[in-house]
Figure 1 (cartoon, rainbow, N blue to C red):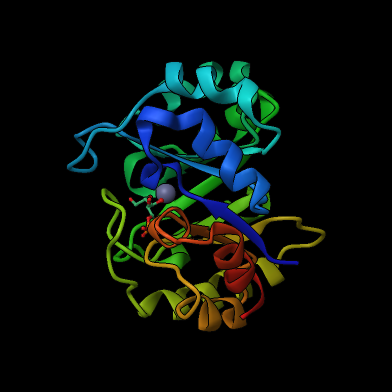
Figure 2 (cartoon, rainbow, N blue to C red; figure 1 turned 60 degrees about the horizontal axis):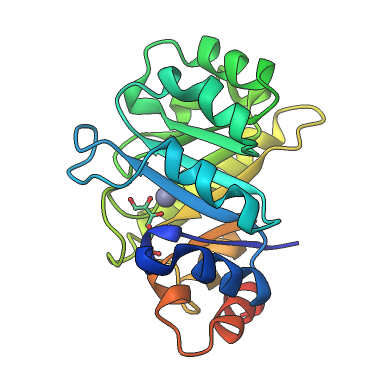
Length: 216
Ligand code: DX5
Ligand code: ZN
């Protein structure tokens, strides 16, 4: 079962609640929320107050992707808002195991994201604790970039890694440059959650685009 997580980064921020309603009605499964600090990545977006403000406007589970140097500082705040997945970047954290436990103690699902240059093997010793592996298929920071094909290989490696774990329910998510064409090899490689920002929000028919990414 493939899940589609439109990225709010490509929404019209002036009419955010309507934008979110629109993609919920169009068949989205999750709302992907990109938190950027202008430090880990060269762009600033928004923080917990905006995420809290939109929570009442949709039933969609929140898939929060933290591109910040200090993700551990925000665990409790996002847990209180009612976030489903809390995903931080491997590159930002020296104590991944500790942070993963903290996220789960706060009743959220724990995800780890990997930049295009970060090997999947770095997750070997935490694979059994994870709820999500997020393979970045662009360098994080901006929507609308081109898909980096090396992500396909990394999804296969993540799948093999999870196959070694007994009874895991962890999912593989891919983020960056996903559209109705790039989705094909990435799903074949084993990804089951696909983030799509510009492809969905920029489509004339958002429902059709979501269905195409799901079914192509
Ligand atoms: C990039 C973000 C992505 C981005 C995806 O740093 O993490 O979620 O919004 O946008 P598209 O689908 O346009 O590449
Ligand atoms: Zn993202």
